[in-house]
Image (cartoon, rainbow, N blue to C red):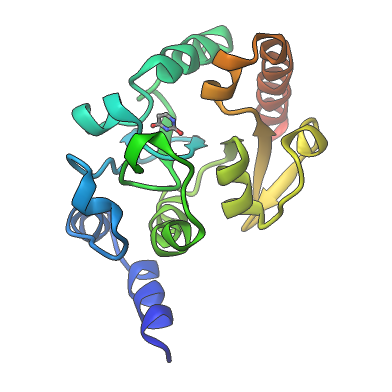
Length: 197
Ligand code: URA
């Protein structure tokens, strides 16, 4: 087994506590050297809803919690609009646990090194529904480069878990007309959730 497959297998066998320690102590890519702290994820570890974003930004890096900056305020508002709240039956995590410098896009090797942590979070949570926000969450969980526009409005699955694709809140801050589409996606997610047994 290659060292990288062995690492993935070790991560895939971790419980919450071991996984949190592994993320905290991880230096598998260069990002940890340039960030303040790792941002593991936040919420109810029995949550039915899992929201997946891209990577911590400046504010998340400072506070150690996902989506607490401007994009996070929008996300909280979007959640409230479908009567959800962070921490209440909702877990929020990112593909990367460390902030890329200057909020640049995650590099493929950073995603490759960090995504096993997210995949283990999904396996431990066993959510009923995943909302993948933006292209890095979608690429990581669905393994496709297809556009968000082409994937929205359809029910996908990751490891058997229903998955719905929507725009990233930071993109919505820059592209206000697409906010209405994100609202449609949330309603679709809520309907889908209600139809699950
Ligand atoms: N954008 C993300 O993808 N995640 C965060 O935690 C904050 C901004």
